[in-house]
Amino acid sequence: MVAVRSDHLGSLDVYLHGAQVTGWVPSGGDPVLWLSPLSRYHANEAIRGGVPLCFPWFGGGPGDDLTPSHGPARLREWRLEAVTESSDHVEVVLALGRVGDGRVTGGPLDALAAAYRVRLGRSRLDLALEVRNSSGVPVTFEEALHTYLAVSDVRAVAVEGLAGADYLDRRGGRDPVRQEESVLRLGAETDRIYVGTTATVVVDDPGAARRLAVRKTGSASTVVWNPWAEKAAAMADLGAGWPHMLCVETANVRRDAVTLAPGARHTMVAGLTVEDRAGGPGA
Ligand code: BG6
Image 1 (tube, rainbow, N blue to C red):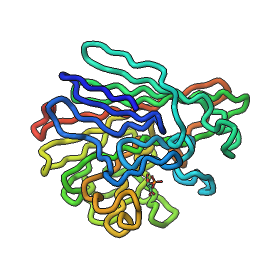
Image 2 (spheres, helix red, strand yellow):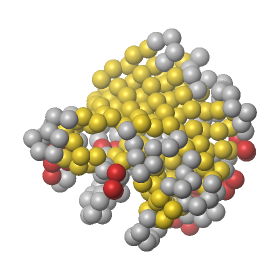
Image 3 (cartoon, protein in one colour):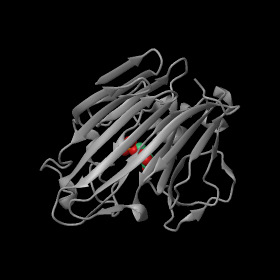
Image 4 (cartoon, rainbow, N blue to C red):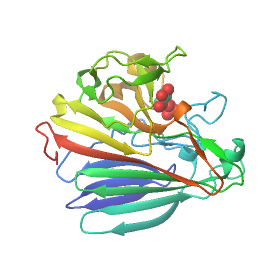
């Protein structure tokens, strides 16, 4: 694990297991990412919380028939390439030579290579996943930065930025549904893949007196997920913590999957910022 501690930037924790960011606390602020106290830290499991990295498929993939769920990248040990520092940021760079490592059955997907840059700045965290096709054939893959935002109470936040966007409801139904509400307020299990949206999403959290913004580039999907009480209770590593998390995931999945020509690269970036409710930096 890489643990960054800086008086003026705050703290950042990144596990080599899955290249998973598990903690970000801006200097003088509160944790922005939710991390389950029930996380099990097993070699063959993803840590529950922070930012698990789903790659090269999401869930069971486009045909819903691939294992492990959300792809093998979040279960692999990534290589630490570099930690660099300047006056306004610290950057941690991790790499995965071949995601399949010869042991996964994703076919050409196994040959994809990835580099992940995690940059801690002042009241901001930037996550950039670069994927390279090192095979000799075109490869189509999915990816998601499965960001667990820490919220005071998921039932009391407003999610801005998705008005008019179409989503696939993972709880059931094949056809896309349009979000007609100007802001999304959650009142039940929510598991949505918004497709064809590059919009910034802001989670307005009056209870925490802050707004968390997720800006993105190279991403056409946004996943919004909270399992709610019953499903959370059935998950060994989540339990009673569900009201305090909301996943807003920067992604390219399903119809937004990325196709890379041999030798080509693609980068997806999520920029997380914290603002107070008057619009200023939150920390
Ligand atoms: C979300 C999915 O992104 O991840 C949900 O939309 C899924 O369907 C959730 O339940 C958690 O997945 P996992 O594999 O980390 O338990």
